[in-house]
Length: 246
Ligand code: PGA
Image (tube, rainbow, N blue to C red; front, side, top):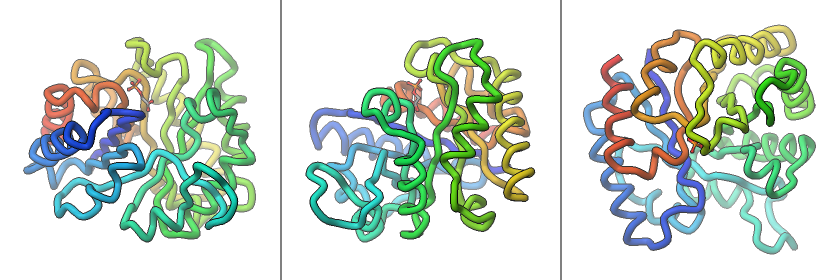
């Protein structure tokens, strides 16, 4: 089955020239992966316009959106603006937004609704903050509050990314075995409450070329959300090659 690789560039790189180089390198790395891997790149907002105009096999996503379509929200970008730019995906609920920017489950729920209403595919990130916490309870709560008011049809369009916060950017990834357990918790919740079939479930948190295979070779894991390693050109290329070769 085709695996999904999402590159979350976060607040990198600093110049348009570097961003374009990285984008073109990622496009080239992606050539030939077509049948086995789907690659989505999520750069900072300021590069979206340029990239959305380039014909390539890469798909473009944003890292965030606001739930209102317009108005007095200084510094925000709406889902409708992203749609009108040709963006197809948006990350919602990333832990850096939850914990640094104080985003609540209620805000995340509104963002998911706005993204879906604008035909964007949300990449809904969730996960426990501290290793060893009551993961089942935390994940189910994030799902319960994040998905309030959405029907099965809409929930079925969301890509879920299990991202334990303690594993993000630390070099200490979760083991594939434990990631599968968490993904089963998410899937169990979705099956029970939304009867969704075929939801996409990803793992994220210190994924690199050394460990990506262990995650992607598990049938329960549909792909990886990659941060730090996605802006290291050779690393990213290797990861796409591994995903394509599975
Ligand atoms: P990381 O980030 O790969 O650098 O751990 C993942 C993420 O933040 O989505």
